[in-house]
Image (cartoon, rainbow, N blue to C red; front, side):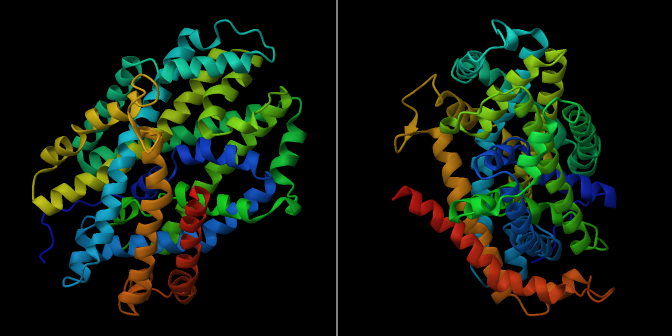
Length: 461
């Protein structure tokens, strides 16, 4: 198959890092990680999370980026190009389908972050609060009202979709790379500011002990599965993002060092969020209800309560939700690019047409996801709101299946020298990691990913 003559590339190595970090650093790091750490033993979970990223996250990332750069196409085209007569391209289809479904409800969540910036700036978020235990109920009510209020959440969702469209229309270098080069430094600056503030709070020590002093007696199979799942989710594995983005890598990019850098920055964001949240929660004696513990509750209910105890609550709330919005947009851009690259390469169309083909239907699918959360209660699948059902199916089923197949493909189907050639840029330098990475991809990662899938199935029984 001839290589597409319009295939783009990132313009610089900094752009490669910024864009790839932006694709991985999303809401999973900012809201999902702290809530899982809170409910799974704090520091013990942190250790398992880091171990999961090393044993599973980095090898799978290298498998995906090797495929992307070698195939130089979309997440379906790489399989068609590397093994033309096989049906492994179906693996790419799973990634495209999963990423498009995720995009439908991720746009809704990104819209929430934008609305909370507005509501924080206007002061609505803090109206009626008394700095007492009853505030958590009030914040919960405000969140429920916001999510289920009908057309209002759609307005913010649609604004986010338009922002995505404007960035993506500019292309890989002028759109995705430029956006990443601006937004990722902004995200880290805001994180550093919040860490600095958290370190000055009265009960910082207690919060840090919970987050940094491991109690390994708290580790059990559930905690292990939670850590594996978070590593899988936070590194955007199985979505086709890494395959697509790495197809834009210049040929001289070192995949191993890039993957280690991206993983390190990804972990740093999650780590910094822990440094922010646990001192803050313990300093103001804010109770996180374990029965409703979720990333959504933590971010949209618990943290506004924390901000209200601080001087200038509006300022800190706007800053935090701006951080959340930056993380959300860098994620939605990368998720959308999977489908845009697929439409461009499979149907040989222009980027402009591909952007509209991909994003215009999202106005409808995201509306269905948003309205299913309360405004239109009959929008359910299997007794679950459409939003929740799609989230569960993609995160717990489609993505693990996609990543599992990629590991089998790279580890067992591709020629033995494929991974070594990609990690050494076809012998231009030596890589002592290649044998270990190949072993992990071939044997360890499939087992760990299968455990994630099986653990979810068990919860349904």
